Image (spheres, rainbow, N blue to C red):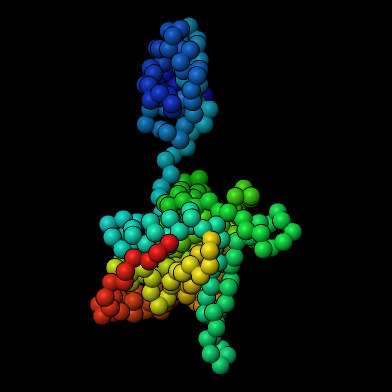
Length: 283
């Protein structure tokens, strides 16, 4: 990386002012430059500082990186997708506690089991609720060159990074299409970094489906039942881990998408045709 360059233009982060390297020798411009973060024009990932060298004033590059690429696409054009995300966001803002449940099969009948509930890990009593911060389509870095923007993401307010005991939660709302291979693999990587990733299937014009549904069973509590999720780098259906049989990434995604995602989407779409749109839920 070059430490300096001639004939460069820089932009002030706060003011949006475009500075030429020749402006560095102008006292009034130089004072403005010193008062804000500067990056090279067209390179928002970079940071530069002005150097007042009479023979050659220039911007010295402190850091520079190629513009990161987004992994995955959004369902922004689908009204049901947008409606569910907005409603869940409002619920999470109004209610501090989240629990995630799933059906467990294998006994005499199916049972609904809690698999996640947020609490304040700094308190001795697990019953003490820890508020969470939620974002819609927040950027989550995967590496230096890629990031992902899931539909919803929430994290602990008391931990800077997600912990095994207090995971961050990602919710991917699925109406018109489920994650492609690159997105699925990226979400799998995040699940190995203490993110719990939920695949929330929703019927057209609905609020959920037979595979995922939310409710507000108590004051201050949002409960989400989910059939499919990722945790610790592994894929789950209800209360059972789906075994990966030495498959490479392409073969693994092909099995998950055709056997589970395709099936879920087909079944929920069939119900969408026969059911009337439900009334708006009450937060």
